[in-house]
Every structure is written in structure tokens, then in C-alpha cells.
Image (cartoon, rainbow, N blue to C red; front, top):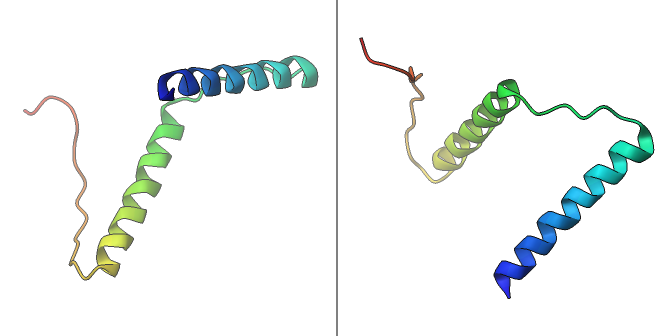
Length: 69
């Protein structure tokens, strides 16, 4: 039942999105990398806050992604 429920939920979400776009005349814009970067930063901040609340000492460092030199 869980698999069918998930498919139904996704279909419902897509139908609502399509209806809003057509009804309001809004142009659909794909969410770009800036949105995902912002969500990563907020998720990281939330996780650090939660770990500190549990008593851990956290020192965030920036991580460079890509090919190592």
C-alpha cells in the first residue's frame, strides 16, 4: 500500500502544480542550484545547532568539492 500511496501523492502534487500554473498564468521556473545550496546551508546550520544542544562541540569547516589538486 505504501508504494501506491507514494505514487498517488506525487501525482496529486503534480496536478496541483499544473493547475496553479494554468490557473494563475504563472511561468514555471525550475529550481536552480542556488536554492539547493541555500537549503544545504540551512540544513547544516540546523544540524550543528541540534548537535550543540546535545552537548557536542562542533567546529564547522568548509569543504571544497571537485577534483583534488
